[in-house]
Structures are given as C-alpha cells and as structure tokens.
Length: 114
Image 1 (spheres, rainbow, N blue to C red):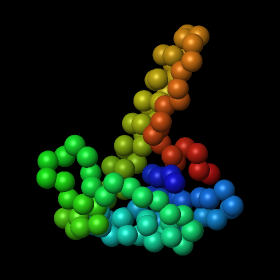
Image 2 (image 1 turned 180 degrees about the vertical axis):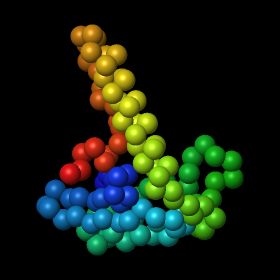
Image 3 (image 1 turned 60 degrees about the vertical axis):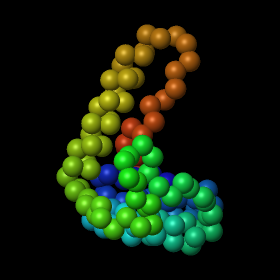
C-alpha cells in the first residue's frame, strides 16, 4: 500500500500483479476505513489492525469516526514535498557516515510511482 500524493490515491498492489486504487478525497474516516478494508477483501488480503488511533485524547474508533472528513489535495501535496526534502537532507548529512544507516521511511510514496 502506498499513498500517491501527486495523483491523490491510495494504491494497493499485490505481488501477483493485482492492483486497486482508491481516490483520496474528502470523506469520513469511517468511509475511508470501510473502503480500504473492502478493497483488501477484494484482493483476498486479510489483516487485523488496532481499530482506534493512539496517543490522542478521547479517541474515536476508525469505523465510527464520521466527524473527521476533510482532505485538501494542495496541502497533501505540500506535505509530500516536505517529506521529500527531509529525505534529501537526511541522505546528505549521513553520506559521510561509514556505518549502517536505515533508509528514511514515509518519504513520499508518490516518488516511487510512475
């Protein structure tokens, strides 16, 4: 699964070549949750997740959250650009380090999709 913050889609790709895309658009957390799990089911992928956010006061379970429903494509893309620049800075400043270094994670999935 990867967020494409250029074309605003969640891409689910399976090693057998199966692929589904869900549009990223304004919708409730509950609707997005249900759409993701329906797509996974369509691909015969069965997962279990903790059904509530962590470290927030009075968390609303994802399946029940109909309050939070915004998505701003411009700001999503700005966020991706910040992540991309952060990844570049991390790579620049660790180039002199000779030991093991882990890759930056969550650096912007859109950079891996054509």
